[in-house]
Length: 221
Image (cartoon, rainbow, N blue to C red; front, side, top):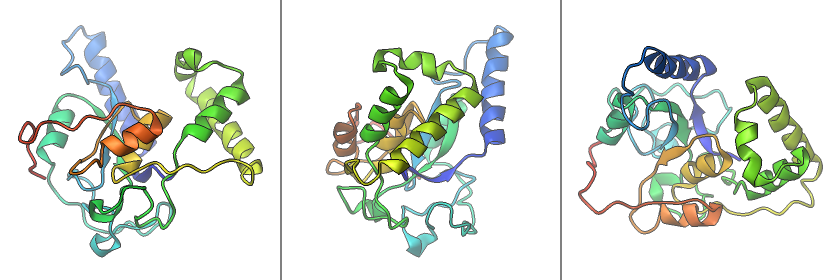
């Protein structure tokens, strides 16, 4: 689907999740309503441990899986990212975007491949596991190994049917953010929106996108 330009390692994700679980086991108050919730961050928002590329090769972005991620980390968090981390949210990765936010289709980024709308994937998943989307919670609560097997089975099915499967654009410029939520890779994603860059991909992938009132959130980072 090309939703992520950089993904957190499994160890990083599990460490964050274990800390959230430990807080609950010890009867402590969650850090926020988002404590333990998986999130993703658009590539034009600063995450301390990651490069800040805005989806551009000029700033060091590379195609996912290329092994070329040697750009220095930005070294600070955007204010909105810091608030999420302080609240215990679990960072799943950095999402793809149209380069410098210049695009409405999710096709203008360093991967040189479009970020794909996950609706065909979700339809194949539903058919492949013989489940209604209303029962998706059962899949989410399955053991990790079972989810991975299910995911791989769907990918193999889609690969064999690639010639006949429709391709839908994901919208932009926050294409990866919308796809990561629609696919279920994260429950919430931070994007940015000047002329529809959150609202367009949210509508195209069947999820809810919100553009806050200007000035409601800090633009630092």
